[in-house]
Amino acid sequence: MNGPEVGPAPGPAPRRSRRDWAVDIVIFLFAVAFGVTMSVYRSGDPATPGWVLTADQVMGALGCAALWLRRRWPVGLALVLTALSTFSELAAGAMVAALFTVAVHRPLRVAAAVGTLGVLLIPVQVAVRPDLDDPLFAVVLLGVTVNLAVIGWGLFIRSRRQLMLSLRERAARAETEALLRAEQAQHRAREQIAREMHDVLGHRLSLLSVHAGALEYRPDAPAPEIARAAAVIRQSAHQALQDLREVIGVLRAPVGELPQPTLADVHELVAESERAGARVDLRAETAGTVPDGVGRAAYRIVQEGLTNARKHAPGAEVSVTVTGAPGKGLTVQVVNQALDAPPAAGDGAGAGQGLIGLAERAALAGGRLEYGPTAPGGFRLSAWLPWPP
Image (cartoon, rainbow, N blue to C red; front, side, top):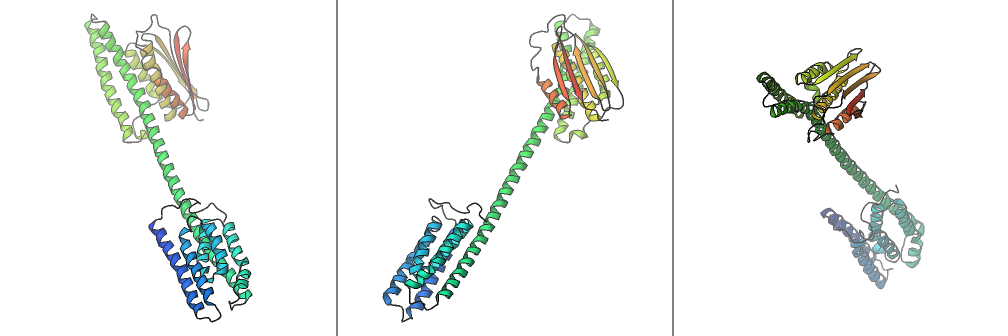
Protein backbone atom coordinates (compact mmCIF):
# COMPACT_ATOMS: atom_id res chain seq x y z
CA MET A 1 0.00 0.00 0.00
CA ASN A 2 3.02 2.24 -0.40
CA GLY A 3 1.40 4.15 -3.25
CA PRO A 4 1.81 7.79 -4.16
CA GLU A 5 0.99 10.43 -1.62
CA VAL A 6 -2.67 11.37 -1.42
CA GLY A 7 -3.45 14.87 -0.26
CA PRO A 8 -1.47 18.04 0.10
CA ALA A 9 2.30 18.02 -0.12
CA PRO A 10 4.42 19.87 2.43
CA GLY A 11 4.41 23.60 1.83
CA PRO A 12 1.80 26.35 1.82
CA ALA A 13 -1.59 25.04 2.86
CA PRO A 14 -4.07 24.76 0.00
CA ARG A 15 -7.37 26.53 0.23
CA ARG A 16 -9.85 24.47 2.24
CA SER A 17 -13.15 23.44 0.72
CA ARG A 18 -16.39 23.27 2.69
CA ARG A 19 -15.88 19.56 3.16
CA ASP A 20 -12.34 20.16 4.46
CA TRP A 21 -13.63 22.71 6.94
CA ALA A 22 -16.30 20.27 8.14
CA VAL A 23 -13.77 17.46 8.60
CA ASP A 24 -11.30 19.75 10.39
CA ILE A 25 -14.01 20.99 12.77
CA VAL A 26 -15.14 17.44 13.58
CA ILE A 27 -11.57 16.29 14.29
CA PHE A 28 -10.88 19.37 16.41
CA LEU A 29 -14.06 18.81 18.43
CA PHE A 30 -13.13 15.15 18.92
CA ALA A 31 -9.73 16.11 20.37
CA VAL A 32 -11.33 18.79 22.56
CA ALA A 33 -14.01 16.39 23.79
CA PHE A 34 -11.37 13.79 24.64
CA GLY A 35 -9.31 16.36 26.53
CA VAL A 36 -12.32 17.73 28.44
CA THR A 37 -13.44 14.21 29.38
CA MET A 38 -9.99 13.25 30.67
CA SER A 39 -9.69 16.60 32.47
CA VAL A 40 -12.98 16.01 34.30
CA TYR A 41 -11.93 12.47 35.15
CA ARG A 42 -8.51 13.53 36.48
CA SER A 43 -9.88 16.52 38.41
CA GLY A 44 -11.73 14.14 40.75
CA ASP A 45 -8.61 12.01 41.34
CA PRO A 46 -6.89 13.07 44.59
CA ALA A 47 -3.67 11.35 43.44
CA THR A 48 -3.19 13.91 40.66
CA PRO A 49 -1.55 17.14 41.89
CA GLY A 50 -3.22 20.39 40.89
CA TRP A 51 -0.20 21.77 39.03
CA VAL A 52 0.08 18.56 37.02
CA LEU A 53 -3.57 18.84 35.95
CA THR A 54 -3.12 22.49 35.02
CA ALA A 55 0.01 21.77 32.94
CA ASP A 56 -1.78 18.85 31.33
CA GLN A 57 -4.72 21.04 30.39
CA VAL A 58 -2.45 23.70 28.86
CA MET A 59 -0.55 21.15 26.77
CA GLY A 60 -3.82 19.48 25.76
CA ALA A 61 -5.24 22.83 24.60
CA LEU A 62 -2.07 23.57 22.62
CA GLY A 63 -2.27 20.12 21.01
CA CYS A 64 -5.90 20.66 19.99
CA ALA A 65 -5.09 24.09 18.55
CA ALA A 66 -2.14 22.63 16.62
CA LEU A 67 -4.52 20.31 14.74
CA TRP A 68 -5.39 23.19 12.40
CA LEU A 69 -1.89 22.75 10.96
CA ARG A 70 -2.29 19.03 10.27
CA ARG A 71 -2.92 19.50 6.52
CA ARG A 72 0.26 21.52 6.04
CA TRP A 73 2.69 19.45 8.14
CA PRO A 74 1.00 16.11 8.92
CA VAL A 75 4.13 14.09 9.76
CA GLY A 76 5.90 16.84 11.74
CA LEU A 77 2.77 17.63 13.74
CA ALA A 78 2.19 13.93 14.48
CA LEU A 79 5.74 13.57 15.84
CA VAL A 80 5.39 16.68 18.03
CA LEU A 81 2.01 15.56 19.41
CA THR A 82 3.35 12.03 20.02
CA ALA A 83 6.13 13.48 22.13
CA LEU A 84 3.69 15.90 23.83
CA SER A 85 1.25 13.09 24.69
CA THR A 86 4.08 11.37 26.59
CA PHE A 87 3.77 14.11 29.22
CA SER A 88 0.17 15.21 28.66
CA GLU A 89 -2.62 12.67 28.89
CA LEU A 90 -5.13 15.27 27.58
CA ALA A 91 -3.13 15.67 24.31
CA ALA A 92 -3.66 12.00 23.42
CA GLY A 93 -6.83 12.82 21.44
CA ALA A 94 -4.94 15.35 19.32
CA MET A 95 -2.14 12.80 18.82
CA VAL A 96 -4.65 10.19 17.56
CA ALA A 97 -6.14 12.73 15.11
CA ALA A 98 -2.65 13.59 13.82
CA LEU A 99 -1.79 9.90 13.38
CA PHE A 100 -5.03 9.43 11.41
CA THR A 101 -4.02 12.33 9.13
CA VAL A 102 -0.62 10.73 8.47
CA ALA A 103 -2.27 7.40 7.60
CA VAL A 104 -4.61 9.13 5.13
CA HIS A 105 -2.07 11.35 3.38
CA ARG A 106 1.20 9.43 3.61
CA PRO A 107 2.38 5.87 2.73
CA LEU A 108 1.99 2.99 5.16
CA ARG A 109 5.64 2.94 6.20
CA VAL A 110 5.44 6.54 7.43
CA ALA A 111 2.23 5.97 9.40
CA ALA A 112 3.63 2.73 10.86
CA ALA A 113 6.83 4.51 11.96
CA VAL A 114 4.87 7.28 13.71
CA GLY A 115 2.56 4.74 15.40
CA THR A 116 5.52 2.60 16.53
CA LEU A 117 7.18 5.66 18.03
CA GLY A 118 4.03 6.35 20.05
CA VAL A 119 3.99 2.77 21.41
CA LEU A 120 7.70 2.90 22.29
CA LEU A 121 7.15 6.10 24.28
CA ILE A 122 4.43 4.54 26.46
CA PRO A 123 6.93 3.27 29.10
CA VAL A 124 8.32 6.82 29.27
CA GLN A 125 4.80 8.12 29.85
CA VAL A 126 4.23 5.63 32.66
CA ALA A 127 7.56 6.56 34.24
CA VAL A 128 6.90 10.31 33.98
CA ARG A 129 3.29 10.01 35.23
CA PRO A 130 3.37 7.69 38.25
CA ASP A 131 -0.15 8.83 39.10
CA LEU A 132 -1.55 6.62 36.29
CA ASP A 133 -3.39 3.69 37.89
CA ASP A 134 -3.29 1.25 34.95
CA PRO A 135 -0.43 -1.28 34.73
CA LEU A 136 2.20 -0.93 31.99
CA PHE A 137 1.01 -4.01 30.08
CA ALA A 138 -2.56 -2.70 29.89
CA VAL A 139 -1.42 0.75 28.75
CA VAL A 140 0.84 -0.74 26.03
CA LEU A 141 -1.94 -3.05 24.82
CA LEU A 142 -4.38 -0.16 24.70
CA GLY A 143 -1.87 1.98 22.79
CA VAL A 144 -1.16 -0.74 20.22
CA THR A 145 -4.89 -1.37 19.73
CA VAL A 146 -5.71 2.30 19.27
CA ASN A 147 -2.79 2.87 16.90
CA LEU A 148 -3.66 -0.14 14.76
CA ALA A 149 -7.32 0.90 14.60
CA VAL A 150 -6.48 4.50 13.65
CA ILE A 151 -3.87 3.49 11.05
CA GLY A 152 -6.21 0.88 9.58
CA TRP A 153 -9.05 3.38 9.30
CA GLY A 154 -6.74 5.95 7.73
CA LEU A 155 -5.40 3.41 5.21
CA PHE A 156 -8.96 2.50 4.27
CA ILE A 157 -9.76 6.16 3.57
CA ARG A 158 -6.48 6.50 1.64
CA SER A 159 -7.20 3.44 -0.52
CA ARG A 160 -10.71 4.66 -1.24
CA ARG A 161 -9.38 8.07 -2.31
CA GLN A 162 -6.76 6.45 -4.53
CA LEU A 163 -9.47 4.33 -6.15
CA MET A 164 -11.66 7.36 -6.80
CA LEU A 165 -8.69 9.27 -8.21
CA SER A 166 -7.85 6.35 -10.50
CA LEU A 167 -11.45 6.14 -11.70
CA ARG A 168 -11.49 9.87 -12.44
CA GLU A 169 -8.22 9.60 -14.36
CA ARG A 170 -9.58 6.66 -16.35
CA ALA A 171 -12.76 8.56 -17.14
CA ALA A 172 -10.77 11.63 -18.23
CA ARG A 173 -8.44 9.46 -20.32
CA ALA A 174 -11.38 7.66 -21.93
CA GLU A 175 -13.03 11.00 -22.73
CA THR A 176 -9.81 12.30 -24.27
CA GLU A 177 -9.39 9.14 -26.34
CA ALA A 178 -13.00 9.38 -27.51
CA LEU A 179 -12.43 12.98 -28.60
CA LEU A 180 -9.25 11.97 -30.45
CA ARG A 181 -11.06 9.11 -32.20
CA ALA A 182 -13.86 11.49 -33.20
CA GLU A 183 -11.35 14.02 -34.55
CA GLN A 184 -9.53 11.28 -36.48
CA ALA A 185 -12.82 10.07 -37.93
CA GLN A 186 -13.71 13.60 -39.00
CA HIS A 187 -10.27 14.05 -40.52
CA ARG A 188 -10.59 10.80 -42.48
CA ALA A 189 -14.07 11.83 -43.65
CA ARG A 190 -12.75 15.21 -44.82
CA GLU A 191 -9.87 13.55 -46.65
CA GLN A 192 -12.27 11.11 -48.31
CA ILE A 193 -14.59 13.91 -49.40
CA ALA A 194 -11.63 15.92 -50.73
CA ARG A 195 -10.39 12.93 -52.75
CA GLU A 196 -13.85 12.26 -54.17
CA MET A 197 -14.41 15.89 -55.12
CA HIS A 198 -10.97 16.19 -56.71
CA ASP A 199 -11.24 12.92 -58.66
CA VAL A 200 -14.81 13.45 -59.86
CA LEU A 201 -15.00 17.19 -60.41
CA GLY A 202 -11.44 17.50 -61.69
CA HIS A 203 -12.23 15.15 -64.53
CA ARG A 204 -15.45 16.94 -65.51
CA LEU A 205 -14.02 20.42 -65.20
CA SER A 206 -11.00 19.49 -67.30
CA LEU A 207 -13.39 18.50 -70.11
CA LEU A 208 -15.12 21.87 -69.75
CA SER A 209 -11.75 23.64 -69.85
CA VAL A 210 -10.61 21.84 -72.98
CA HIS A 211 -13.74 22.61 -74.99
CA ALA A 212 -14.11 26.14 -73.66
CA GLY A 213 -10.49 26.78 -74.61
CA ALA A 214 -11.12 25.45 -78.08
CA LEU A 215 -14.06 27.83 -78.52
CA GLU A 216 -11.97 30.72 -77.21
CA TYR A 217 -8.95 30.15 -79.45
CA ARG A 218 -10.94 29.12 -82.55
CA PRO A 219 -13.84 31.56 -82.88
CA ASP A 220 -13.84 30.94 -86.64
CA ALA A 221 -14.43 27.19 -86.29
CA PRO A 222 -17.21 25.66 -88.39
CA ALA A 223 -20.69 25.78 -86.90
CA PRO A 224 -21.05 21.97 -86.51
CA GLU A 225 -17.77 21.83 -84.59
CA ILE A 226 -18.85 24.71 -82.32
CA ALA A 227 -22.20 23.01 -81.75
CA ARG A 228 -20.48 19.74 -80.87
CA ALA A 229 -18.16 21.48 -78.39
CA ALA A 230 -21.06 23.35 -76.83
CA ALA A 231 -23.00 20.09 -76.46
CA VAL A 232 -20.03 18.48 -74.73
CA ILE A 233 -19.71 21.49 -72.41
CA ARG A 234 -23.40 21.33 -71.54
CA GLN A 235 -23.27 17.57 -70.96
CA SER A 236 -20.10 17.80 -68.87
CA ALA A 237 -21.54 20.63 -66.77
CA HIS A 238 -24.72 18.63 -66.16
CA GLN A 239 -22.75 15.53 -65.24
CA ALA A 240 -20.45 17.56 -62.97
CA LEU A 241 -23.50 18.85 -61.13
CA GLN A 242 -24.78 15.29 -60.68
CA ASP A 243 -21.39 14.10 -59.47
CA LEU A 244 -21.21 16.99 -57.03
CA ARG A 245 -24.58 16.02 -55.56
CA GLU A 246 -23.37 12.45 -55.07
CA VAL A 247 -20.14 13.60 -53.41
CA ILE A 248 -22.03 15.92 -51.07
CA GLY A 249 -24.09 12.88 -50.12
CA VAL A 250 -21.00 11.58 -48.32
CA LEU A 251 -21.80 14.16 -45.64
CA ARG A 252 -25.18 12.56 -45.04
CA ALA A 253 -24.64 8.86 -45.60
CA PRO A 254 -21.80 6.32 -45.59
CA VAL A 255 -19.90 6.09 -48.84
CA GLY A 256 -20.99 2.48 -49.27
CA GLU A 257 -24.60 3.63 -49.70
CA LEU A 258 -23.77 5.95 -52.59
CA PRO A 259 -23.40 4.85 -56.24
CA GLN A 260 -19.70 4.22 -56.85
CA PRO A 261 -17.87 3.50 -60.12
CA THR A 262 -16.30 0.11 -60.82
CA LEU A 263 -13.67 -1.16 -63.22
CA ALA A 264 -16.35 -1.80 -65.85
CA ASP A 265 -16.98 1.96 -66.00
CA VAL A 266 -13.43 2.58 -67.29
CA HIS A 267 -14.63 1.92 -70.87
CA GLU A 268 -17.20 4.71 -70.59
CA LEU A 269 -14.56 6.98 -69.04
CA VAL A 270 -12.24 6.41 -71.99
CA ALA A 271 -15.07 6.89 -74.48
CA GLU A 272 -15.96 10.18 -72.82
CA SER A 273 -12.36 11.38 -73.19
CA GLU A 274 -12.34 10.33 -76.85
CA ARG A 275 -15.52 12.28 -77.48
CA ALA A 276 -13.70 15.29 -76.04
CA GLY A 277 -11.02 14.89 -78.70
CA ALA A 278 -8.40 12.90 -76.78
CA ARG A 279 -6.57 9.96 -78.36
CA VAL A 280 -6.79 7.10 -75.88
CA ASP A 281 -5.70 3.49 -76.38
CA LEU A 282 -7.29 1.16 -73.81
CA ARG A 283 -6.10 -2.38 -73.11
CA ALA A 284 -7.95 -4.20 -70.33
CA GLU A 285 -7.10 -7.84 -69.62
CA THR A 286 -8.38 -9.19 -66.31
CA ALA A 287 -9.05 -12.79 -65.35
CA GLY A 288 -12.23 -12.87 -63.34
CA THR A 289 -14.43 -10.29 -61.64
CA VAL A 290 -12.51 -7.49 -59.93
CA PRO A 291 -13.69 -6.70 -56.35
CA ASP A 292 -15.66 -3.48 -56.08
CA GLY A 293 -13.16 -1.73 -53.82
CA VAL A 294 -10.19 -2.57 -56.06
CA GLY A 295 -12.15 -1.67 -59.19
CA ARG A 296 -13.21 1.67 -57.72
CA ALA A 297 -9.60 2.56 -56.88
CA ALA A 298 -8.49 1.53 -60.39
CA TYR A 299 -11.23 3.69 -61.92
CA ARG A 300 -10.09 6.73 -59.93
CA ILE A 301 -6.48 6.18 -60.98
CA VAL A 302 -7.41 6.04 -64.66
CA GLN A 303 -9.66 9.07 -64.22
CA GLU A 304 -6.88 11.11 -62.63
CA GLY A 305 -4.40 10.00 -65.28
CA LEU A 306 -6.69 11.08 -68.13
CA THR A 307 -7.45 14.37 -66.36
CA ASN A 308 -3.75 15.14 -65.90
CA ALA A 309 -3.00 14.24 -69.52
CA ARG A 310 -5.77 16.52 -70.69
CA LYS A 311 -4.54 19.39 -68.48
CA HIS A 312 -0.79 19.11 -68.97
CA ALA A 313 -0.49 17.38 -72.33
CA PRO A 314 -3.57 18.27 -74.38
CA GLY A 315 -3.64 16.45 -77.70
CA ALA A 316 -0.99 13.89 -76.73
CA GLU A 317 -1.73 10.21 -77.23
CA VAL A 318 -2.56 8.35 -74.03
CA SER A 319 -2.36 4.61 -73.40
CA VAL A 320 -4.32 2.98 -70.59
CA THR A 321 -3.45 -0.56 -69.49
CA VAL A 322 -5.34 -2.58 -66.89
CA THR A 323 -4.15 -6.14 -66.25
CA GLY A 324 -4.37 -8.55 -63.38
CA ALA A 325 -5.69 -11.77 -61.92
CA PRO A 326 -6.81 -13.05 -58.51
CA GLY A 327 -3.84 -13.58 -56.23
CA LYS A 328 -1.50 -11.58 -58.47
CA GLY A 329 -3.01 -8.15 -58.05
CA LEU A 330 -4.31 -5.53 -60.44
CA THR A 331 -1.90 -3.28 -62.34
CA VAL A 332 -3.11 0.04 -63.73
CA GLN A 333 -0.93 2.17 -65.95
CA VAL A 334 -1.66 5.46 -67.72
CA VAL A 335 1.07 6.81 -70.03
CA ASN A 336 0.86 9.92 -72.16
CA GLN A 337 3.30 10.59 -74.98
CA ALA A 338 5.30 13.77 -75.42
CA LEU A 339 3.68 16.90 -76.86
CA ASP A 340 4.71 18.41 -80.16
CA ALA A 341 4.47 21.84 -78.47
CA PRO A 342 4.65 22.74 -74.77
CA PRO A 343 1.33 23.51 -73.02
CA ALA A 344 0.26 27.07 -72.43
CA ALA A 345 1.46 28.84 -69.29
CA GLY A 346 -0.70 28.25 -66.24
CA ASP A 347 -1.92 24.82 -67.37
CA GLY A 348 -0.06 23.14 -64.51
CA ALA A 349 -1.70 25.10 -61.71
CA GLY A 350 -2.65 22.90 -58.81
CA ALA A 351 -0.61 19.95 -60.09
CA GLY A 352 0.29 17.31 -57.52
CA GLN A 353 -2.78 17.35 -55.26
CA GLY A 354 -4.53 14.64 -57.23
CA LEU A 355 -1.44 12.43 -57.23
CA ILE A 356 -1.14 12.80 -53.47
CA GLY A 357 -4.78 11.78 -53.09
CA LEU A 358 -4.23 8.78 -55.40
CA ALA A 359 -1.20 7.69 -53.38
CA GLU A 360 -3.32 7.82 -50.21
CA ARG A 361 -6.12 5.91 -51.92
CA ALA A 362 -3.73 3.20 -53.13
CA ALA A 363 -2.13 2.93 -49.67
CA LEU A 364 -5.54 2.56 -48.02
CA ALA A 365 -6.30 -0.29 -50.45
CA GLY A 366 -3.00 -1.97 -49.52
CA GLY A 367 -1.28 -1.14 -52.81
CA ARG A 368 1.27 1.33 -54.10
CA LEU A 369 1.45 4.16 -56.61
CA GLU A 370 4.35 5.29 -58.79
CA TYR A 371 4.56 8.20 -61.19
CA GLY A 372 7.13 10.25 -63.03
CA PRO A 373 8.31 11.54 -66.40
CA THR A 374 9.25 9.23 -69.26
CA ALA A 375 11.61 9.83 -72.15
CA PRO A 376 11.20 11.75 -74.31
CA GLY A 377 8.94 14.16 -72.43
CA GLY A 378 6.04 11.92 -71.53
CA PHE A 379 4.54 11.00 -68.17
CA ARG A 380 3.68 7.64 -66.59
CA LEU A 381 1.22 6.90 -63.78
CA SER A 382 1.34 3.31 -62.51
CA ALA A 383 -0.34 1.56 -59.59
CA TRP A 384 -0.55 -1.93 -58.18
CA LEU A 385 -3.56 -2.96 -56.12
CA PRO A 386 -4.00 -6.23 -54.22
CA TRP A 387 -6.53 -8.70 -55.66
CA PRO A 388 -7.35 -11.48 -53.18
CA PRO A 389 -7.36 -15.00 -54.67
